[in-house]
Length: 610
Ligand code: ADP
Image (cartoon, rainbow, N blue to C red; front, side, top):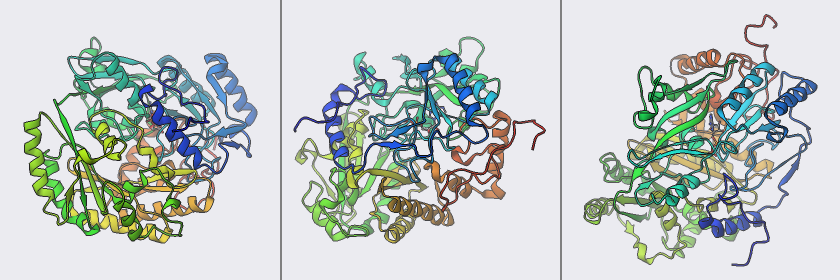
């Protein structure tokens, strides 16, 4: 490999969000590939100037920023008034979404502030209440595909919690738990276990890419691929700063005990009384400053396996086979059934290497190209892992083998035949708790590659998989976009993740991608399927589909919002929850809008002004 002309990626030894040095070479070549696909400059001048949030004049805003600088130190507050810079996964912006569905200047912050402790987070909340300035907390801001670090309301002040609050506060070897601050990435936690010599004893659970924070991923209900894949289900205990004018701090679960709660804070998530943690995930009700997480004991062995299935029509019978195996834990992890095209795209080449025509790449070409790869021509690839000592694995793997082979043409690929750089080995690392950087590669499918996901949830049934697959196929065909679905199978449900890869610099393609996503959300809702997570531009629409009993759930969320955040300063609009001051002023996005903003905001809570 020739040396990269680009500066090297920061490592964990010089940045909280850096890459582990074991992955530096991989990061260098990933970065080279991404920059080879960029046709436009990373730097974007803010043609609309400083994005001052609505409801405050520019001079008043600047005076408020000066107050914040005096309180925290000028170097910990950055104004975002001249240009924003894109980057890539490991060197991403904290000011905006570098993979936008709208114009780059829509979901953009006016400033970024870096607190160093809980007291400073409280101070920022009080400041926001005083000046009625919207704030938007991020842990690391790598929620790419769902908005990244971008605030929903243009001109919000981003609170980048991760930069100065990145401590692993404890790792408990007896209980297999840890307590972390927002800036701890999956990479960092994994490296720390190795450094302490605990890597053989306990595992973390990591998502496809390990650069996100444990806190950010968990509060946004992300998943990983060991048996501990449901991160929210595996967390235990939160510390939260509330958004009201007094910026109260609370601890949930056993952490709420007056004395000594740290004992069991990470062992028992519920404590006594209502289980409040839920309202702090996928919401805008609080800022999480600490979180407990469980760690998985090394199961004493593991073995990845991969099967290919020849026909698209194998999807439905395969799901019927997978469901009982998954529910009874014979299939033990959040496994993935991927479409062949995704397996091709993860090789990291641009689409034009295979096909330059408009519209989805023809199946015949996908098959011919796959024929030249380790999987061979196929429609679906299943990646899974079996855990435990060899004799136990054998029992499970034999059951899986005879079940999967009921599909005519099903093939088990022998890992011994696969080269070291085959994507299979990345899934092998991830499913055994070692964070990786491989998944990024399918973003190179398009120049200036960006992605956004359609992520509906359904039971693990053939009929459901077929309906979702067919609707995605129809809408992709209309939009002229390649379809790359992956079914991620949880215990009793599956998330269908359809990542649309588009050119972020091509406004026409962005519009097609947005329309395709919106159409799929509506089609899915009409059939009784809802998304588990979505991009900030689509949150109003998705929240609107959860409308049972005249939107009773959103009414409840609004009540909570108004009570906890009477001035509506914390992440307005996130997950479709708008504070009173913003409601019914045209802030909701339903599709077709050219601006992300509404018309004005209301007065301070309790004020007599109208
Ligand atoms: P990651 O750290 O994995 O890169 P992000 O920081 O982008 O993830 O977090 C995903 C989303 O979750 C953010 O956009 C934000 O709305 C929310 N979030 C992240 N961290 C916190 C936190 N500590 N408190 C409250 N909300 C958070």
